[in-house]
Image 1 (cartoon, rainbow, N blue to C red):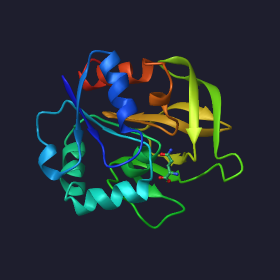
Image 2 (image 1 turned 120 degrees about the vertical axis):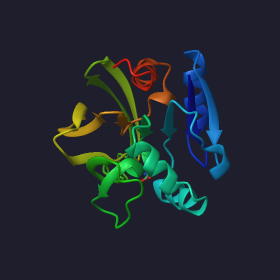
Image 3 (image 1 turned 60 degrees about the vertical axis):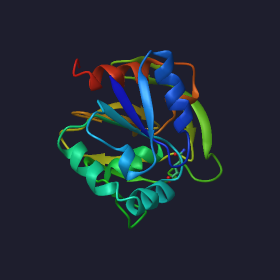
Image 4 (image 1 turned 180 degrees about the horizontal axis):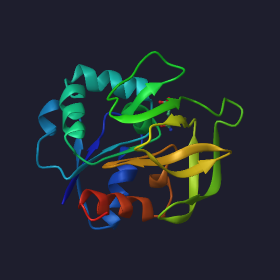
Length: 190
Ligand code: GLN
């Protein structure tokens, strides 16, 4: 079992720590040659989606990653990672991987309440301490997308087959259940 974590920028080390606590091996992906077929899953961390998307494109990683995810590579996107996986970004002309059938809004909570914590009921997981940092939310989703959590009536966690996304940051808490859930997904058990 090996998970690749995109490590251009943002909260990638925290994901590595969470998986290490679960006994799951990870490696960092920064360049094209780091991305190979032996991964059981990949993580797209939080940070700045515009910067990460640009670097992914410059490193010629966007196309190979898109193809791999389309062909079934399990992917876990948090915050900026959710934006990178989305088919459409409603307040931004860009789209990056576009593999997940969701329309998202970037920086959806505005500057005033840009960062906050809230206990959320996450389906299949339970009550979860969600940390939001200049987070997006999911405005709309296709029929194959299962919404796992909402905040203020907006979807903030979802799964579509082998793709899992959260608008919040489970890697910034001590709660490992969402990482454990993705590990099970990547093992093909759920
Ligand atoms: N605001 C960032 C973006 O639009 C996402 C923030 C985050 O990942 N914590 O990409």
